[in-house]
Length: 153
Image 1 (cartoon, rainbow, N blue to C red):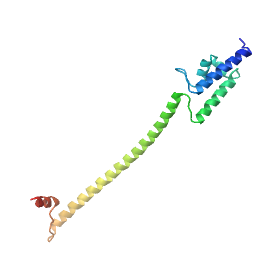
Image 2: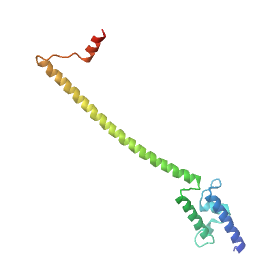
Image 3: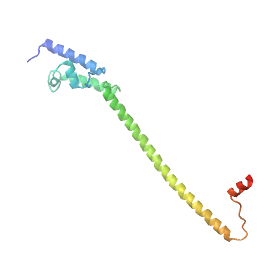
Image 4: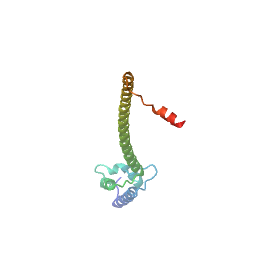
């Protein structure tokens, strides 16, 4: 069935009104800011928006305006905005996790080195004590424990 010029004008007005609502973020329940919802909201068959059909130029206009909003940092669909926000948050959290894992790895290496140094120092102290015990004329100093106990009495 062919549409008259009046019907076509009426359809275009409904499409433009629906387009404006969708781009302002006034989405119907279960709808998105897309051609499918635009067709449903304007009561026009969705296939009329594709190819060389009668409302293809309005689809292109809708897509241009939607892209311009995205370029300006505005996202009319709250779900898309939430998805974009969550993706950015996930990216930031991944960076934080990588930084924390690197720091943990460095601290683990530091701990291993510190323990190895302490063990080597302990072995050196034991070696020096053994060699001091065999040398005559070396007076042993009291240990900190004996000094503290002696000073308390």
